[in-house]
Image (cartoon, rainbow, N blue to C red; front, side, top):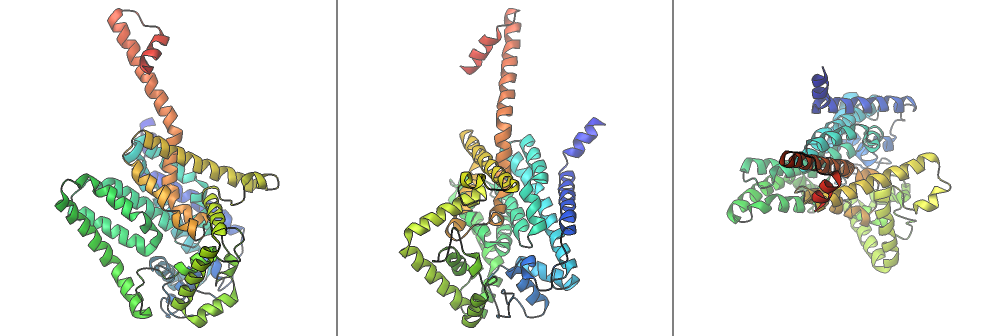
Length: 453
């Protein structure tokens, strides 16, 4: 009976089902506390994501990301998630309560399935126990429960895809199988069409994966070319569509200028100015509609760079606050907030600080132990958030890192226990050896000193 229970609790399928049930229960209680969303309340459907999905479902094509008005074709977003939402709108109604439920159930499923690659990453890098513990930790991780049931964005899907990309990179490293590298390229192409921010770690992952083949450059070039061709072929239809619509080379998204300006303009109070976003501010929406998308984005980019050149001190201050917010969830010094903050804010500060600290400690311990997979995990931790330090941060932007951070945090917690157990085992074996050789046990202190030497 005990073995059956142990096998059941060690099953990835069991962990995924438990993660799904935990999130569905949380979603049930959350939805009971709120009334049905108002029609065309775009913010509850992912703002511009929901607006574009509504346009697709209405037969107007991939267009109109601002929910105030129809603004024509757009490349504001990558296509995968808006089309998923459009399919739900087609089935259950545009901006309907049933559609809202279906979107969040889909996100809950994405979050639950993330347990699988998390387990693989943990096992591949740190061993079976760490992988199993990390997968179970994802079941109850607050951010992993919160985002799928609150945000109708690609947040949960992007986190799943980041975990899949890391797992695939760990599995692929050093392989020369052409089919594997072609599949790896397909995984990256689809990831780019889900959320292009994932591409920030591609150069580091690709170089690390192919490094063991460096002595055979011809073979390394063949597999790298196979992956590159698949990536380019995968995103080419969307890029071609953008060129035909806008007469401009836009590989994936057009909105960088706006995002940069929202975080770098004279009205930014601390990290960015969300109140100036076209989906929050009618005059900006009207300006966007009047100028059309590409001229509007180009103007915002010029304004942002002009501000950054003229106000370097403010830019440094903004970047520091964004860095703090990315890791702590707050941009003001925690000690200033602590005296007046309500209990839930204090718990949020503690949770984010502990999670970030443990993940950093885990990364340092993994590097110290020369764990091979630590390089890929470090690339996610160090590289992925860089763009948000320059533009503007949000905890949902960081969420794709959370599966990797969780594996490292679990390793940091398990590391002392693992090494204490290994020392005890070594001391025990030495004691047994001394008994066999002399017939009497050596003093424990002598065993400890011998082990430490």
